[in-house]
Length: 164
Image (tube, rainbow, N blue to C red; front, side):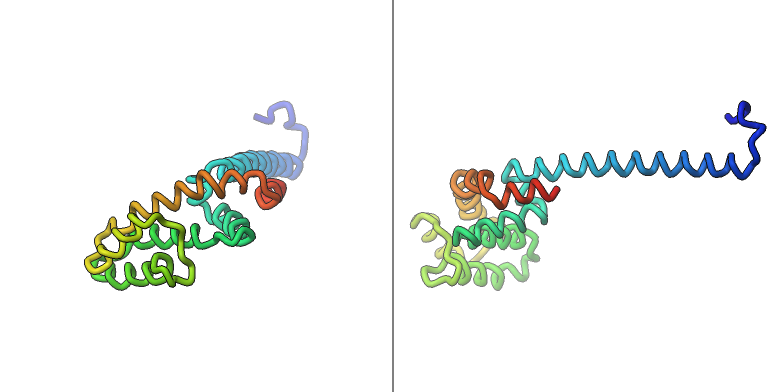
């Protein structure tokens, strides 16, 4: 490899090898940073990716809080958590979600149509793993059609993109 450099002292050859290794690591880091930034920018461009990213959730939460509709995200996240709940704990968790988000006196009541709300009220006695699926989908649709487009135009999204 270094036949043409055989006249250099071995310490110089070692330094050159070390520099080459450092430069290749730097190039890899820059490439990773570029890919990571592009990935994070994509996260902010579609709701599903946003909701599956901790950073995306946080920025979206700040935005929703400013619009007094943070309960939609909190409900969606509670439903995601509910899906992974062991069957033996479904009853307690379902009741907790119902009291927090569904009941007409809930502290973070979400905007559901009366048909969905009534269906949940009747299912709460014997909850299943899919008890909140329809309600979660309705809230997701609400966020996708209403909150998310405004979020994309908001200073929260613009600042998050600048920070990347």
